[in-house]
Structure formats: C-alpha cells, structure tokens
Image 1: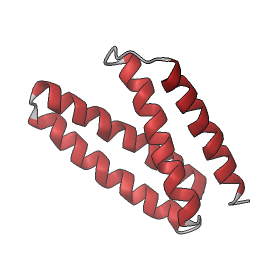
Image 2: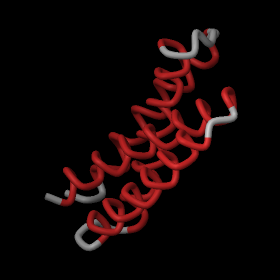
Image 3: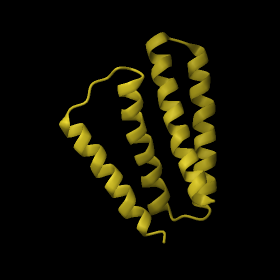
Image 4: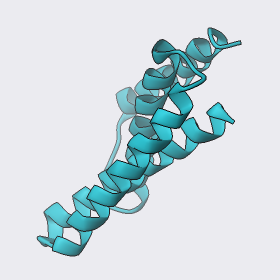
Length: 105
C-alpha cells in the first residue's frame, strides 16, 4: 500500500505544480487555492508512504514522479518545448527511480 500512497503523492505533486503554473499565468486565486490543497494532500500521501518506505527511497521517487510528470504536463498542456537533453534527463530520472526502488525490496 505504501507504493500506492507514493504514486498518489507524486501525482498530487503534479496537480499542485500545474495549478501553480495556471495561477502564475492567469493571476487566479482559485488556482492558488487548488495548489495549496494539492500540496497538503501530496504531503499527507507522502507521509503515509514513508510509514513503510525508507526516506532514501520515498523522497527521491516522489520528486522524480513530480519532475517527469511536470515535464509531460508542460509539453502537452502548456505547449512547452523540450530538446534531446531533456528527453535524456527524463530517461535518467526514470532509470534512477527504478534503481532506487530496488533498495526497498
């Protein structure tokens, strides 16, 4: 169940970073409110995951999920461009998260 909480925490990190971008672009208090709620929910899910996963596993994977998904959201929702170094960086992040997760098994 800890891995489910960790995945949820990472996805909620994506929600808050996306809503923060919406708020910054539009000056919207609504999106700032969504950001705050998603941040709290993300941290609570991370807390639940850390009850059964080591810090050295949970935290890097949480930030990795958020980083990779923020890049994907940036490309598809905000029409941001990426280059080959970004793609390679994302691949390194994914491989790194896989290797780090081996520590938990």
